[in-house]
Image 1 (cartoon, rainbow, N blue to C red):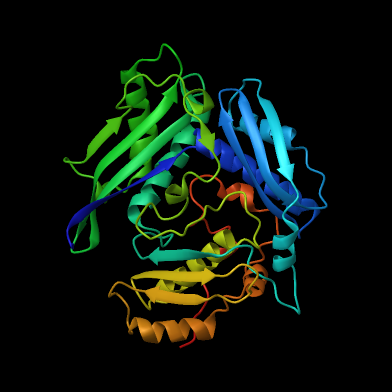
Image 2: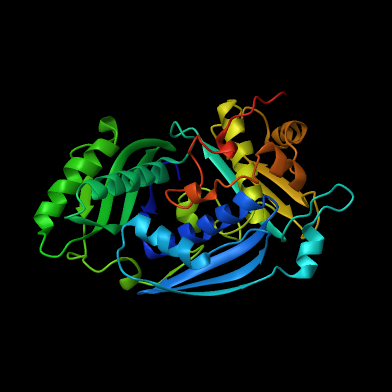
Length: 366
């Protein structure tokens, strides 16, 4: 289809699943801060005032799991007293042996397939629907902190973008749901969200008299976070990636140390796809890469420009192979992934923010 409407959603830091992503990545950062070679796959689940932290860790770092979880929740804005149960074991010796350096090679922490995607629809080289959904979610959090007596931490945003001839034409529908204090009218909330969240976040040329705004469609939203819904690490991988516009791999991103290619190779594939588009070799680019556990080199590599490339995809694949090294060792080194930067990725998407190494643009030599 050349004319269509595509929708993507984002969620705020107070959403129950995002609470767990933030806990998991805060734990990972704590490990990497003391031991850059930490092997971590520690996740979280939350319901009401109960948090379960569980998984595998092989690290020299001394980690106070309950303290990290409680600090994350408090920073988000929840004041309840949470009970934290920890069930963390050492990483399997077999997996550890496969991943550790062997004759200079660093093996992938698991098998799997990863995708990277980029397009020219925004200055972040992200698809317009997820770009604006994240923009709204960030603004909602900012405004919530300014109006803590009215708005509370849990929230969702959603943007439907209309495309004409496969290009962004206008924003068709905006949906914002926000937790709020008891006793606040929906009219007051709608006015606040429209004036301080929606209007400052959207380009005026993309909205018109037919753009629809739906704010708190369920009405009252007082109970939120873990008291409104359970949460688990890794359940929002479409929000974390491309909003459904680009394909995603089989594994989540948060909680995993960079030897786990579900995370690091997804970052590298994005780095490659973004560089392709920024170098004007295509308007849209998707890169797929796949690995076998314990092996340093990928088992397959694929590129798709959806008919927007200046060369054939076969020729572009050869250009990519000349300019980029998908070995696990190189990914860790080129993107400098052993640093504690992951807590910052846990909300509003892992892609698009220029502070991350995988968002830099490489000059591609033909």
